[in-house]
Length: 146
Image (cartoon, rainbow, N blue to C red):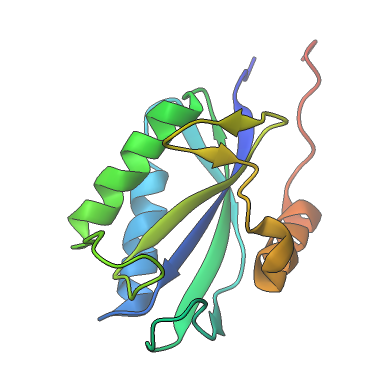
């Protein structure tokens, strides 16, 4: 019986080989311990957010089922970002790869490292579209008795 939680992770890139960065992230997410990549939304290009002038982003949402805790998953996401040269220098700045936990099951997390659901979720129409796409494509969760 699978006991993992469903997690929505946003992928974004606007520096370098954007498609390659997203592909690397999807491949690495599929190899995380106690984690399964359930589905991936289509990739879409969006205008950058925030005050820093920069190139457009490629964005995508993936749906994972994981037995990791939110903190464990976040550590893995930061490691995957670092593999692609992510440097955290400028808030809202350009990024080779940005991975955000948008939702983590029904959990609410509020600490210095992580806020879930992501506080910008309601303000990012592309995330809402991508989540709807994943929800339509994903198989239903098994019941606790399966």
